[in-house]
Image (cartoon, rainbow, N blue to C red):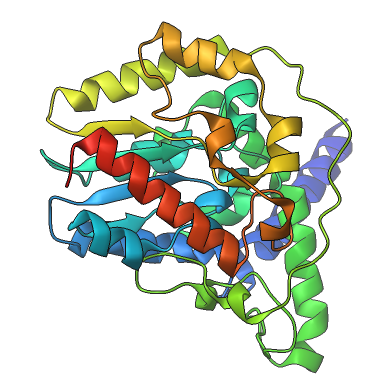
Length: 313
């Protein structure tokens, strides 16, 4: 029995060392798409107030022309959207700590968050934690931590592949050669907008025939109302805006339960989700990623509705 315990212990130690080495011992990809999160936090720390902050996933990152919006509203703008896979709880709770009285937060959550709880996905959260050096890990809820743990193996496999490819690539960083679009931190501008995709042709979008039928996660709605109410007491204003997407994706991903749930907590969208849906020709490569023309149209729509909501000339 003693020999078995010793062997088991040694095996467990070896297993732990191998996993920790693959997880933490491989040099970080400094151009990884999720590393852009660090830049967005920097923008929040250094942009003059009052500021307008856009929070959401990649629909915000790929859909907003922040300079045009800033010039039209007469206020500094920070695009804090990045990736739907990190959910909306983490980035919203994080960015709110930097805001002050008079700031405005425009919430453009991808529709899935209202059904899945906004806790992120195992395929993305571990990579975000590593890219941000485990920023705010202690603040995560149980579901978010579970997603991270369950996704670590996938992250380790990715690091192993990076090690295998290193002799050929001679770098651990995401390569960008200008020949094809690559999700990378270097693709963002000084406002936090992803702009590198404007240099590439759009891909044909193939809409799903499925329609969203899930019930809205009421725990998420309750968390959202409680969180926003807390910061409203500090003089921060919140605007609920439908996400940037194309028409066929809107038809598949949205259902009226979202609007009804927001109405119940007295936080309605400032305009109809259908009003913000753009023609399918405005897709870059997904239902939530807009090409240059889509970004232009969406930003102009945003300016129109935000001026009305904020009562700006």
